[in-house]
Length: 123
Image (cartoon, rainbow, N blue to C red):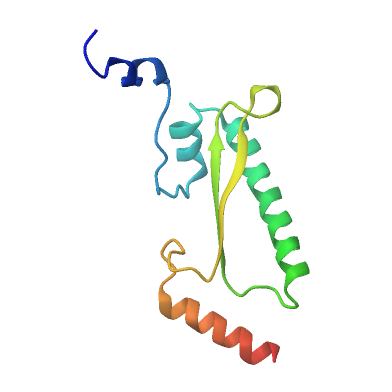
């Protein structure tokens, strides 16, 4: 073996089914079931219910930390098709952003308007 061979871990560290994440937001539930869950609509429904439960928990936390609800928030989730209880989907929070720069096509003017309206109505 040549110099530096012991540093070549690529073949031993490869995971056959590993895929990088993307910033692609999927809005259509049927397309999501077909594309990401191999046509398994019940797995898609499980993942969506788990994400909605996480949203509820984050919103509860935000309202306990702040006297008023946040006017704009973005929550990103990582979904694993097989990783939850019983081999079903698992959902984790990746990011919670309040009034961030990237809110999936909600333009800056609309976000600013929402925040201004919230501030005027609340105070």
